[in-house]
Image (tube, rainbow, N blue to C red):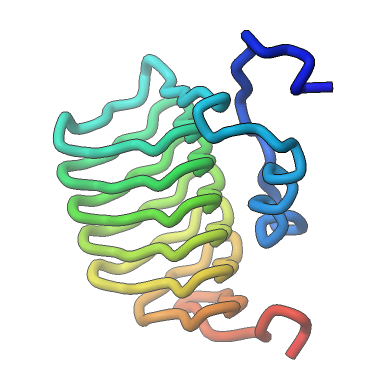
Amino acid sequence: MVREMPGAVFVNGIGSPRSYRDKRDLIGRLGLDLERFTTVIHPSAVVSPSATVGQGTVVLANCTICADVRIGNQVMILPNCVLGHDTSVGDYSILAAGVAVSGSVTIGRSCYLGAGASVRDGVSLGDETLLGMGAVLVGDASTGSVMAGNPARPRRRQGGQ
């Protein structure tokens, strides 16, 4: 169906704690080139001129993206998020409302950061990490981790392990 609309551009709205690991495959099933997805930045968002925002990424109202932040493709950043300087966000990741990320943080591909979560400066989140609502991450999170609490601790790994 979407291939029958050659002049149309698309916005990706996929993102929940249930689907964050599948986002890449769900988008891929559409069979569309990355260029067919538009990047949307709400007019009330503040994005540093030195920041880069990838193709198909959505940045909603009242977000602040500081100097030298690098945001990948198909990322969803919900309202009131703050991304500190020199942070990178991997493709297909989702930041729920009110996430606060300090400087020099690395967020891997296909991660989900729950509403109101906070991440300390210099911390890394491996690919497919879920950080729970309101969690405070003060140390690195390994690939596939599910982290929750204050301070955030591993709850289980993806697949229930």
